[in-house]
Image (cartoon, rainbow, N blue to C red; front, side):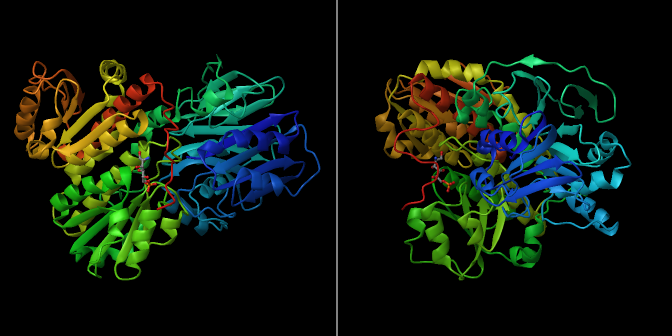
Length: 605
Ligand code: AGP
């Protein structure tokens, strides 16, 4: 997720762009840049670093008024966070500049085509192909060139384009990534969200997928990318800047929970070849090694550890490779270390967790290491042999939500990749469901009000137990962690089969239980557990597959999840657990984004 911002009008451009960009910093902050049409050239300034670094390195002190400019703050997905990979990107002649938020899935084939036509590239990013594609199509009409270029793109984009040839306009377009246009007094704006423009105007147009807009300082022309005019819906918004950063949500955590349908799609970009096979270009030279892999060790902490546990069950079932999983704080003190026939996978949202890093460093070169990370250029990415980025975008809330489901999606894809390499199974049946995961998550999000109502019945309890089996034993741990870390409820997660070995002694009418029981090979075993629990007067919230009404009378509350393979049920179940924890914490009056004693990244042991 990155932040784009464009301005055309009377104000001093550098100051306006930098101030606006600062408002977008929460969307990404590993590199930044601005480009301004300055008579017959484009002023371009980029840095690998935060927006404040950019502001301190603005190397052009002549004020610029009455022109247009664009700005970008980056969250790297393709290409390390370096100056050359920072946006804006320009065409060969430096006459056209673009900023982009999203992932261009077919950028490699476009780049090959443009290189063959003589274009010279400066960066490793997917975004730069857009600038050269517009140049390729430019024949005196910027709007037409942008239209032809975006019609070639596959994937997600929100772009804003300027050119010295047509300094009286900006052209913006979107598909899959957010884009808002602001209408001021003899000035106009385009941005990823309303935050950079709020101080100047509250009259905005939320651009829809498949639309593009020509933006002048006193007018706009909204069309589809096929060229048909669209009547703009001008809205008056009443958010303040803080609310706008959260997209109108009360907390970042809730915003990030609702971003998950898009994140599910983002994790899939570039992962499937035209013939439906799964591909990881970065693992091409590991194919023979992975085919002969005899063991996998996964190391992670907290929620990432739970993603590792789900991955264990999946990889063992689908690829037949034994997997062990451990938390970093324990793994790093074990004596038995993996050998060259093992693969060590480190899962970390931040890529900076001390115990996970300590574990990887202990491996040294004894085994190959793979990072599953959400932060390009993080320490973990730099200290492992290979990296798969989960593309979840910056996660601001301390409680991990979209990064967790993105980790699961990525590990599911990796497990299928192993199965494909070992020719174990026909993966198409599984891929079909992963390709629809955004819809399954949307189904849970539509239960938001119902889950909120359930939270209102349980937010006064100070204890809770989560239970599950096989794939959803980790779901039980994750649900308990989500609840405990933001609501301070004593929530504990157990494998359901362990109840009779002790935990059931805790249960009474003041100890509600979340029983995770989708259709699966252990459904009947879970049903027996639920009956044992009810016999102790404990209340039960059951998560069951839609269409199964058989537990309605036995359980106190039911949350339905989509009818999908049980191996993939941890994703919609996680979203339901996130909403339940969020509403209980909010009803208990806790700052959900900043729970006590916790930090977003645990960089100490
Ligand atoms: C998740 O909700 C927690 N905030 C925490 O357990 C987190 O998952 C853990 O600290 C690991 O962080 P990482 O993924 O950045 O390594």
